[in-house]
Image 1 (cartoon, rainbow, N blue to C red):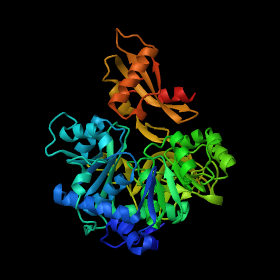
Image 2 (cartoon, rainbow, N blue to C red):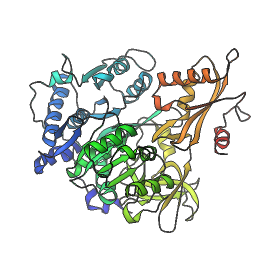
Image 3 (cartoon, helix red, strand yellow):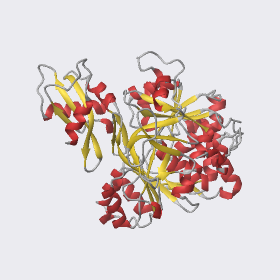
Image 4 (spheres, helix red, strand yellow):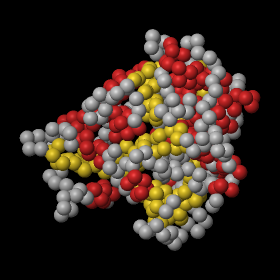
Length: 523
């Protein structure tokens, strides 16, 4: 498919996506419409615009930000996070959004990789961010590193600096192909990968999946669990609703018990979350009313047929499944309404192409399993990683790392991941990263980390561990190792299961055979 033939994807050579998604919405009559709801209040589109403009003045006039600078953004989902996001975009800088769960070592690595010296951080999560902005991952001083905290009126806070700033701002005249955000995703090597996306990419994802599949309307109120650092959450809770003048309910805590409570109390119509969350909320429906929901989207992991059927039976809503990738920015295969075939991920979203290929990049016959390859108006651009770029993009096709089969009607059916990524509860976890942390513990001689099937979460992180001489395997040591991982990296990455073994399967050259560990778990 020639995506350039779609009129909605014909963007001018110069555009700033903040202008299109925010300024333009206010100019065209949406100023007093609700943009964001949150427990205790709401922001209109005008509120968001004026707040973003004031922050933009602070960035330029007080913090010396110039176009192209990369700025780390950290905090839970909130209107102020959105205002900071748009302010960074307005001044022509690049947003690098991170999750509150990340630890110092992860934040420092991101700051190193993206060459960041300024962070805007929610005051409740500022300690680790300040450490990461003053020292590199290697422990060396970070020249000029600075953290400005918000959600506070104390001297030096972003709010204090905004006082008296104008409510108007002339947005930077950026090119459509200027980088606007760098989204980090974990890889099989254990190091986070930065993926770069343009201003036109942001508009393209707004004009593809939500227009042709999801069908967001101006009267919708979106809600969901993904943080803005996940492009699934950024699209579903910020970009897509703002493209049509809709609203979102932002929950700082959006685990299933909080998410279903928010649905009950605020009556949103459109939900974005993972299959794990839908399964969990099914068991909580007796205490909460979710009848306001008219559409539900699932992504982040494969949607099991059993979850789809149970949710439809309980609510009458057919979950819209979808597969996307941080490298592609958002969903590129999906289906909705009567086009849904339960168990299938769906068909190619208009604007994209997809096919299943063999190891040489040749398309396999319909019905046969192959590597999923996709291309379209968005695509993979790794930050300073030529080798990874070559392995992910083959002859213009983005190789996602998933195995699928395509049927005669063009529906894609998920089979498995083709790399060592673990998808658990909607989160991507690199087994190698967890291994690296476990090996820092004095009790661990060797370890291998893989995905283990789990009824509730799809998969969980499982570690096979060979202990050092002098340490006793058992529940106490397992808990100690789990707690150790939680203190070093994001808690969702910790191994929920630990099995102590005498040795690990290795090749003659000493390479760990993770596939044997995975085979053991699946059998």
